Amino acid sequence: MASAYLTRSTGTPDSRTKFTLSAWFKPSLSSSGNGEVFGFYGSNDYFAVRTQSSSALDIILYDNSTIARKGSTRKFRDCSGFYHILVALDTSLSTAEDRIKIYINNERITDFTNDTNFSQDAEVIRSSMATVGVGTNVDQNGDRANFDGIITHAHYCDGYAYSPTDFGSTDSTTGIWKPKTSPSVSYGTAGFFLDFADSSAMGNDVSGNNNDLTVSGTITQTIDTPSNVFCTGNPLDTRVSFAPNFSNGNLTIAGGGSGTGDRTCRGTLGFSKGKYYWEVKYTSNSSGNSAWQGIINSEVQLGQGNTQASETTNSVLFNLNGGELKKNGTTIATYSGAVNDIFGFAYDLDAGTLKIHKNGTYFNSGNAVVTSISADTYLPYFAPNSGSSYVIMNPNFGNGYFGTTAVASAGTNAGIGTFEYDVPSGYKALCTKNINAQEYS
Image (cartoon, rainbow, N blue to C red; front, side):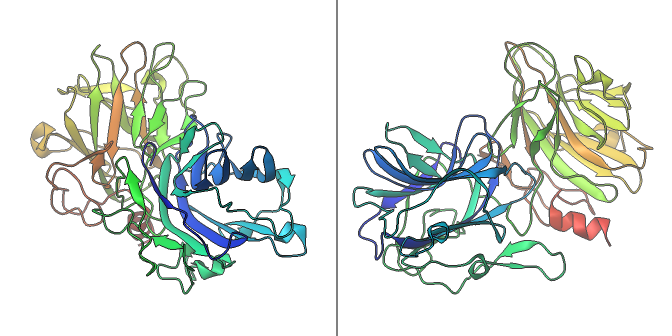
């Protein structure tokens, strides 16, 4: 969400001491600060549910000073999937530790670094907290902090303290914690349920209360969901001390910062067989710097040297600027490429081949440009060059966007996912449903 968020008037809730907040979120590990999932706030007081820049979970009530706080020792840094967070608050309870219960993926959090309990019968949603926000909060200094990542299925149940099993269940086949899309819960007077299903009304409340939220900024609807997770760049799998800059849910990958050279990372999802297709557009490169994209062995340690040239073990890399194509560190061909071109990559690990197109026209007359790719487990690879004029790369793994710009005219044959150009027959988007179908068929 980053610069976009949702708000509405808090109004007069049924209860200021008892409520449930539930949402699914996919972090991007932005270094800019806290990631606010929920917030209630006024001129100098607030209640926030957030992930800190350290990736720890933080629940805080502030009114001129910290009134209560629960900061987890655990860190939630996995960008390859979604977390379900549930906060059930009831300050009427006699046991102090039970007045707020915090769960991640149906597991209660009980270990805290900051651990100040809520007083019995304490009003948590103060009458002065005039605004409730999803993906945002404003602190006592008037500074706004927004969530950088994906939020979906956001529930506020006014006057009810629910359990995680009211909003999710364990899949009997995979064992994965998954959302209930239509949970049997009550929302009270002030509550709401945002499912983000209507792209024209992202603040639409589907609880039955019609407590719609106002959208500030532009919220990009995504098909990356807890039930089907799509690949993105991975801030946890980068060149040591020389990582790219990530934004837009880790789907904008850029150089930048001090020093020169390629800032490298892998993607969040890998594959060892099957046919996969994705597209990459790069949108900034005034100095003619390199913009490498491809696949690489999942075990290779990134960035041994000043550039990607050392990534020679079971890799296929293509420079979007200049068109140099490398297999296992050796240049095998050169094609053309420039800023704002859209490149499509069609990997067939069953046959060990790669086809590449530029703006819909395939190189080598549509034949494979790389053959005999070694059998291995591969992950997408990105290496945008840094320096004074750095490269910005925008992969589309099927979400239908390059950064925040939607594809101009969706191609055909995509199956799950939306791409700019037609997807070759038999190729799939890199997402968990397709991996399950291709890897375990």
